[in-house]
Image (tube, rainbow, N blue to C red; front, side):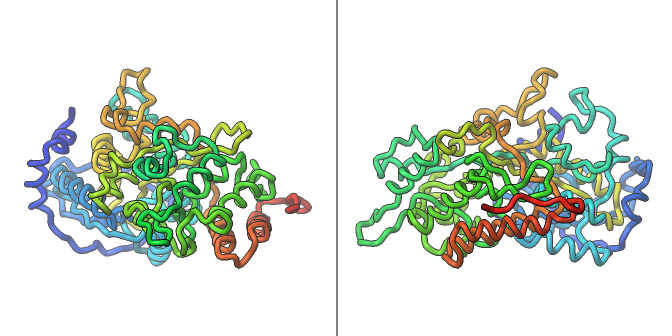
Length: 486
């Protein structure tokens, strides 16, 4: 066990270190050389740390807006600053829905945080815009990992691939978690459902959702609904709708990413089913078009809904929202239901995030030290311990057993994480193209139109299909066309 892991284990020491935390002002921002001019050999670390001037790094993360994450991140920064006394870290919270817009605006003016945490779909866009620092020279100097393999082989290959563009690396993987169905066992029992038999198909799910939509306090008004979902235009929509699409055997785009695939019978079936949960079956609470992920979590924490789609972060957040719920005991997790009769091999999607360095950083070497720390084995073990977030590292989540490396035991023993980890091989990532944020917002707005009744589900999906094809037209050669929506 390394020194860092030991410190993370002993809360008493951590508490004492907390007293040492200091606030530092932001470093003046100035743009660095373009990515193509990244140093071929990073400058060596100074041996006499005390003789070096103290630099301040800005680290921005939406998790800083969540109390349990904020606590974990602040504790880790204390450890990092003790290990690296020549570096001070200023933490900057940013709302999840605003992070891309804020970072783009700041970076384009030559500023922005030194380190950023982004959802996977934003990585390619940030790389192609030239916003990220080329990490390749740093990685090449790292040599082998502690278990004997190459430095980047520590992470799952599919996550590493997202960090690379034109044979260069621009980020390091962080979280990697499949989306699964969470449900309230107590509400299942009250409705006469067996909590040990979660729905396996969407037909079963609908039957369950109807049974769970009830007037529990007998005042003549519904107060509990079967399902909660995101209906606002929000980045969190993707993770909640995509499993429904995939589990019906549909996909967003054609394999070559040149056309929308939302005209398929499977896509139509999935979208119509999703909209009908609100408009026809009414198993979702009113006001869905205004609900973001935080609202839906609050609904489940207060037992207003019985089922939702979530992942590793779900239980810790609920524990903070309503400790009386006793989320770890009251909730259970199960694989995403599938469309009956469909042989769907990969019915869900996965959350993937990454840490990266702003190209404008004035302190690339120190930023690299912080980046390595944030994605280290000890840090990712703490992220799981404090927030139940599964890691993209194979020395934590599994996959290096043949090399003699055992996964993080607490992760494998957790009843929720076991389900999430088991579904990772059955998950697929959304298209990793720079147009993806636009595409998923189009689908999001189509769902909102369907929920509100502004359009029929059929018209909303057809309009989304055509709009996506317009966006992707730049990838089609002259004369290439996409199949019509029929």
